[in-house]
Image (cartoon, one colour):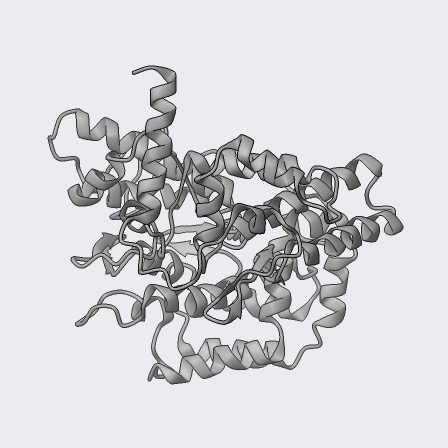
Length: 442
């Protein structure tokens, strides 16, 4: 097959997976010109389709994004935190994030459809017709986003593509998946449950929420906001904390714990495992309730100063890391992140139906993951995406090699039935006298 034919095959494959099992389109088709025009507010079902930077800072149009970018570069210029070159780099990074978030929408496929079903020349022509003010690099970033998503599959729970949905951690596993001596309804259920020490009960979570509700978080957040060495590498984490430390959000966590009929003595990790019945909690609830609550406690511990009483309160209740068997891993650590690859080795190498799905995706298609520019610190998107593509390579190799069963308790040095051989990996950490050295760049 020639290079041209290969590229054409990839583009056709992407287009096909975009429309696989797509629900009937009720909104009008969106033109490419509308997508690239900054003032366009995309409307679906009578409501604006918003997009975000860092997961939580929302916009209705690209025109709304531009003043935000300017305010951020000015913010760090006035504080002396960034030099001129760094300010320019930040502006381009925010612009790229905003354009990609606008195009790769979680609620509306039309912007991405318009982009990937036109040629790069047609996109250049549409950009040339824009007669509204745009920041430097606007056209180049749009073209880069188009090129990326011509050859990428967004793997998430609401993907219009069957393989895209299967490759989501939220994908329900009817027969359950066995990990570390317990059965879970999905890999998402395991990933969030393991963030809770086995001894932690609902009563303990309620007590901690009460502690958080009685603290003034404004000075605490202001310290993170004021230091570019803290804020910029950890922007998503800071915005996550700002959102989830709001009084109404803390009350929401408390109300949700009551709404599920939980008892004070119920243990958080245990009730997320499959018991007599399955799917007591949906994957969505796993993420927004159990995942966000654990992440909140873990991140407050990490970002608090050593003498902050809240840090001690969290440490006593084991929110100072991840406890699994006889190991303690840092919440933001290479060791914890690598656990995702271990889990996927079970799902995609040991479960034939999932191995078939991931192996069927052409290597020319880059497996990706992009949701509102979110970048969870426990496993940053570049690491997550790297693991996705790595596990596909392993699945394809496994599919083409001997079909002899592997020992489920020993996979390349990984044991999911007990302790695991230790990894000796290191990565750079932020060094700052105002924060614990556990914080690392996203």
